Amino acid sequence: MHGFGSNDKTVMAVGPGACPMEGRWGDNRVGGETALTMAHRLPLFCCWSVFHLCDQISEKNNLKEPAKTIAEQRRFPFATDNDSTNEELAIAYVLIGSGLYDEAIRHFSTMLQEEPDLVSAIYGRGIAYGKKGLHDIKNAELALFELSRVIALEPDRPEVFEQRAEILSPLGRINEALNDLTKAIQLQPSARLYRHRGTLYFISEDYATAHEDFQQSLELNRNQPTAMLYKGLTFFHRGLLKEAIEAFKEALKQKVDFIDAYKSLGQAYRELGNFEAATESFQKALLLNQNHVQTLQLRGLMLYHHGSLQEALKNFKRCLQLEPYNEVCQYMKGLSHVAMGQFYEGIKAQTKVMLNDPLPGQKASPEYLKVKYLREYSRYLHAHLDTPLTEYSVDMDLPGSFKDHWAKNLPFLIDDYEEQPGLQPHINLIFLFSKKERKREEGGAAAAMDSGKLWPEVYPGWRQSPDLNRSKCKFFLWRGKLYHLGPPVSHRSRSLVEESTIKTTATTNENH
Image (tube, rainbow, N blue to C red; front, side, top):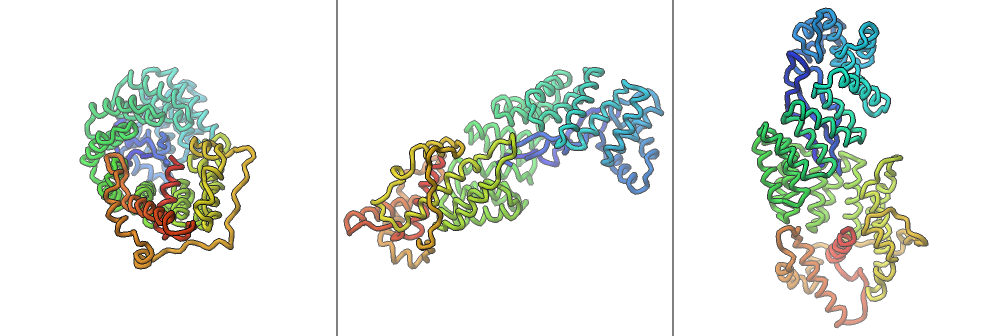
């Protein structure tokens, strides 16, 4: 889904003399969904002067001078009344600010040997463990242990509960993180805390409760484009598309270059069936960043369902150039190729998705679960390209369990299923027709063009597809010829446009 913007600044009080901090609960796709991560926050040093001092350390290897300045200004959490102790603490915090986490941990540990209950050292050591990387479960456990010790010693400090929540959430311990954020809000409510808790509810798909928290956050601080974006997303995921659009527009008023807001606005317009407005919003997002993968992915999906298969394919290919392991784009690339009759390329793309086995304990993506069915269906279509339409039936040839499992997005575990034959070299490929050839080949094209405009599937919420509508009309005209003008014919007697759009419709129906 969407990550919080990198320019969303908040203020976090970490002790006397605290200064503004850039707070960012990180982003993730998908799928693209969003997760909170400590790695994107700098919870200890925030002022430009402090960063400048940290830069000086790497050049001069001199800790005492910048540490002394930080200690004098008490620019670190849980400062004491002892100046020499504060200076030693400041040295360790400067080490964290310089990315020297192991050195900082050793420095804090030395201080704790002399004073075991020194809260600032316990807190700093916990932060250093967390900054080392939560991918190592040992670091996460040590960070949680230290922060829990701080809470036991200082139970009324909301920032410690917030820090612990930021470590718990990437570990999947969402309920515990929610409890910590709720406690922090009880101690000292703030726009930031409500926004952070709303994000966790959003991740948990509790959109109504998330909406309440984002609303509370906005009441405390109206100028929050990120909170406004997420408020819109809570509407979007509950089907309240018009309300979502208004929220996205408000977020763009607050931040005119907000790519995620343009992307989400395009998605909302797409769901309403407003192809032109959706295209415009996606285009604005790509003007701000032509390599924005999620926008390319969403625009490709919209173009595919609109019947513009070649344009959709361009977006999916560009998406994969930027992010080669993007399963959604890889899956849709395969689907687009098959819909255009390019079975070799389509099945090759589908096979790549099949090779992305989920890690142990990792949930398989929807694309991974669906792709085996799609590959079998693609092989089936290819095997029957030269077979008269009256001589085969998908409903009869494919077992009911196959279709049932596919519709329910279940793993491909079907008893006694016989795989479809691979691509057969004796079956010729489908080639594109030029516009002139299509016009000459299809006697009913003009009638279909006019009839397609009258196709009844045009109403709010329906993604209009003129190409598909025209193709459906051509299909019925062609079917009339089939029964009145002679013996049965095969798929290949139709033009590629007719072929691809009918298959697109069939595949889309299978997926839904």
